[in-house]
Length: 129
Image 1 (tube, helix red, strand yellow):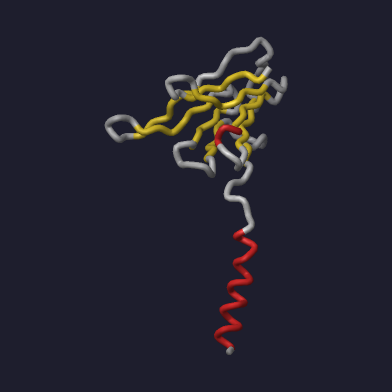
Image 2: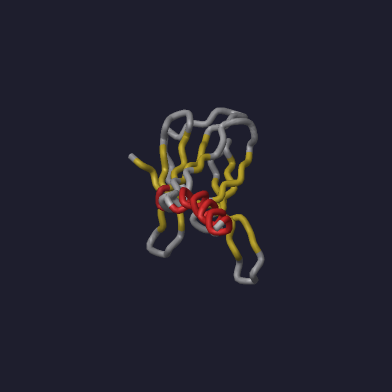
């Protein structure tokens, strides 16, 4: 009987975990640091290196020879994309609901880009007007 009660107790402890969502919201930090790693809960291929001063975002990709590198993700230009010298100007955010809800924010102007793919399946940041 004690064994059954112990097993039921362990099961009861695990039940709240079943109701939790798989992903979590993530955002890069606005505290210190020029560079930051950012990894989505969705898949390892959505691992990014963010230059928070320039807004350049690099994706961790595998080359044909099986080695790895950082590939720049292009973003559309804008005349309100303002940058302060030697300061954090950008923040990356991704929702736990899917990689399609990944955004780059200019923290000075509020200009926002959404991570999308073109017809050739190449990722880029598209301006949100």
